Amino acid sequence: MKINHYIIIRFSHSYFNKELCSFVNFLSVERLQKKLDFFKKTCYKSLMKQTEKNFKIFVFVHNDCPVEIFQQLQELNIEIKKGRLEDVELDTNCTHIITTRMDDDDMLHKDAVKQIQDCCKEKTKLKVCGFKNGVTWNVKENTYAQYWRKCDIGFIGIGESLISDVKFYKQTGFHIFSFAPSIIRTEIIKKSFNPEWQIIQNIFPSFIYSRYSDQSSMHIKGWVKRTHFSKNTVEKKIIKKYF
Image (tube, rainbow, N blue to C red; front, side, top):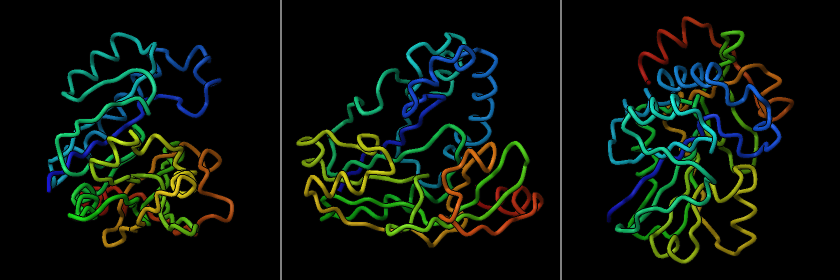
């Protein structure tokens, strides 16, 4: 069994909010430099620390991304792409393809990639897997909380992955960003693909989900149970030990 694993990251790419891209400061060098610096110390750093190294990173940027930001991303030795996330073409010289979604300010546990790949078996045709729990970091207030998303699947979108055999991918071209995360289940089922579902819950915290206020998170208002952590616990015990 040969796995080609792609982690697809949106770097300040307003994929679901086209109007946001029209804001003048959305693509300002000053704003994107701050985003890039934060990306390096969070998302990128957590991926460089993965115990399983067999994966490739695709970072999608806005078509009008400033040259100086684009060049700095290239220096990280990752593949930078412009355009639509669903248009990415993946190498099919393998038996299985895995695509994993992240945003530029999220972090994954150091064993997360290994855990995702362990969900892929020789006979796996189509599977959706993801992590049940993690920590949400309110960056603006520098506070932390444990989030358990209450839904019938049981996992949040950070690190959500689509696993398929290469035959399925060649026939459909589908990968994780072919579906908005909130509708991935209904869209797949609607097309009668009948995937397996697997919740990864044997590592904690499985991810750190960066938000800038409680209001900016869609995982509030009755969808979650929150257990707050002290800054010391997260930064000195959780991040240092697991990320």
